[in-house]
Image (cartoon, rainbow, N blue to C red; front, side, top):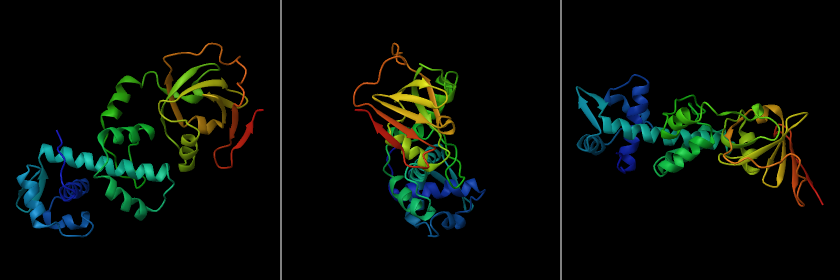
Length: 254
């Protein structure tokens, strides 16, 4: 079990993890992974006292508890980095780093797993660093892989639930979220040709093929009856989303 730790301890464990990723375990070299700051002696002593690390001949290695703590901090940091890049379109590494260094200490486990699921269980952050998998990744791999598929594989009239989204461009995720296409949302495939069209509550969304391929779904527990033949209700909306690179055309029915 991982107990709450001080930010200084978490940052130290994060630095040790990143050093080990590069094959470095010398204590004297840790500052290069610690914002170029020397790790205070009291932090080193506290980490050892709390049973997180062990020091021997100028080298540092994790205990099992320390490894789990560092893994959790790294996972929070890098998932937050992915979220800022894809969901908010924040391209500056420096800006993202400033924010992730703050939120990595406050994100709750359930929120971390929610972010991971929303982003399709990413394996690497925008800078190419690996993201440690979490319980949600293992659960999806075991329980949903056999039935999960791309939205484009669905047939007309099929009702499905969004599992996750793997956008190829940051702006696509932003637009999908804005229209309510998020994990857990229930969609009905209205047509597959010539335009892939889905119904989401009272709205119809027309998606280009490559956009629909970014959305992964599983069969819905409940199938709506004769959804395809049902007329559009009053005040429904139709949205044409052309690759999300241009402004969506919205036609409000009278």
